[in-house]
Image (cartoon, rainbow, N blue to C red):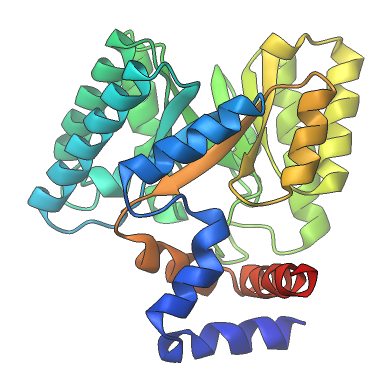
Amino acid sequence: MALLDRAIVRALPAVPRRLVRALASPYIAGPSLEDAVDVVRQLNARGQAATIDVLGEEITREDEARAICRAYHEVLARIGAEALRSGISVKPTALGLELDYAFCRENLRSVVEDAAARGRFVRIDMEDASTTDDTLRLHRELRAGGHANVGVVLQARLRRTLADAAGLANVRLCKGIYLEPPSIAYQDAEEIRDSFRATLRALLDDGAYVGIATHDETLIEDALDQIRERRLSPEQYEFQMLLGVRSARGDELVRDGHRLRIYVPFGTHWYEYSVRRLQENPAIAGYVAADVMRRLVRR
């Protein structure tokens, strides 16, 4: 299967953009804010919250970073006007982290302050390991500045993650999509699961609010066990999933009384986002291809 996954990734440059769009369509709301709003309305009607992400990362021009910053202000205004159950998720490199740390911090602060004024939450997303220190620094500085409406992401794949969890109040915990070298990241699937379990336990023991972001049934069941052990109420944690992935399981979690939040990306950078995700983790290419085949068979 790994050989097939890599073959799919190598073929991507030759795949027409319209076909890549068709493959990615279940997982991306669309190119416009209206597309994202429509998806969030549907999710809310099913008892699910959302976090909206404006696609764009590794931005190398200040005007592009400012444009993405403006797009987030538009998102906040729109979800506020429609009283949607949604926060936002922001990638630091989309706001200029690779250009200048202070420039990124000011862009991020403006978004966080706007969100706070509207009673909305901002999740600072985690990218590849080269950005981990700066991302955690951004989060700590904003929290120290009195911004309680901001949280961060930890990736169980990284060996440092359990130590990074100490003292964090609001965390999205995921496996992590970025393939990193063995010196800094676990390579074995079960080692990554063990790291996820241990980090979740540490965060819950410390009283943190955790967004348990996984589609792995083994980890979902383990998280449910940990929740039951602590007799946590649904207000003390939530599950999180990607748009279009394991929707039926997400509905089950909601029916069982758990909070669920869906990651809803949108924007004109959909092609770059789709190709980069597949190139960074070829196993996802096989998953997407299999999912598309299942959809075609059902039709």
